[in-house]
Length: 207
Image (cartoon, rainbow, N blue to C red; front, top):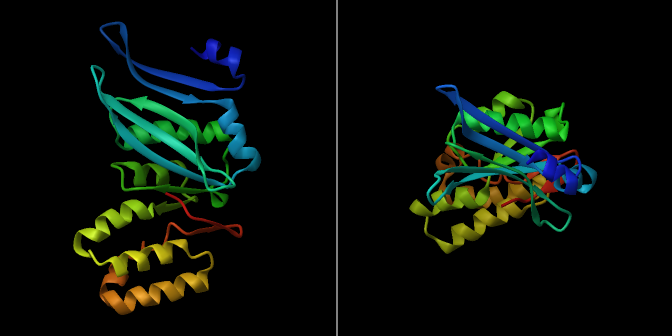
């Protein structure tokens, strides 16, 4: 597979992990990162990576782990993906370690990751790149928020805070939410608005 891929996309990466069972290699995981996608991120896109996972359906169950980037027009594009037997801390560390190696990331201070609260993902990012920013996706945050706060006004307040492009603007929007919800709720949920990331002067709204 690696040879075939390099014939059409030189510099791409394919990794396959197998378990040995009774002397026989049994497929466990595979990782793919296309050179064109990797180069696109490194040469002209923001230092932001979104990570997520979904279920595989059909006769071969498993999980797909994905990493996406954000282009100049705020569009998303695939950087790398993996097929794994399960999504947990171990599989996320395996995937993220290969991704970081592929991208040549040595200093996490200039990078940010955005995700929901996937099982094992938060400690995995802290393990492989402890200096990187890690923020929660506001769309997933809102799905939890609306369980107890159905008000359309509160929805607009939440998204206004998420879309703020400066810290003073964000603070103004958060004051409005604090007035509506009370100090206690906002204090217990400091993640609100943290999909707005400031990295070396770059503001990013994601998800």
